Length: 246
Image (cartoon, rainbow, N blue to C red; front, side):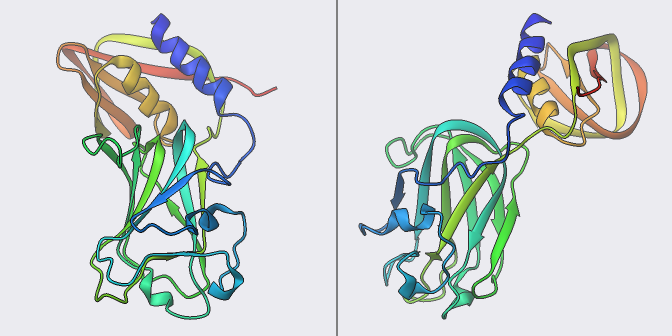
């Protein structure tokens, strides 16, 4: 219980601050060796390429990607992307947005967490928020352009902004446990290695009411809606009690 309480306390202390673009001015990499990679995180949403504030992949690059190092670990809420507006807006299609703990260029075997898939196309000059999955946690954000139509179907990013997930309410740092209880109904299964990991997923899922956990199988189920309690040996149900913000 001490470890779970510590996770909750640290999360509350870390994520109650105001909303900030965590990608602003951070180091970047891309699939082509150009010097304009950082223009996608310069804080300027200028959508005309002539405005010298957009990054673009090279002609013939059929697997383009762009990546930013946030220089710290964050649980992500959404990514904001600004598309080129003076032409070629339809090139913003079939994006895969991934999150890594380690640099995937230096460590190709590092596992990825999927933030989102974006089909598009995005309207020219548009700025769109793309929500991340609840598992998107890490330091490096990579945007890949999939299914390029031809050698001139370039990936162009005029601005990329990254925002972390923040809690929508206050909860007690105490988790309450019901022994031999498993709630069955509207639940989401999550792959975890410990009860602390399961607790973390619940904290940052805005719809999570509590979670089932099995210490033998490491089964983790987030309760996100109506469910009924059942008596099951080996399972425990954890829940949080709300408190008032001062």
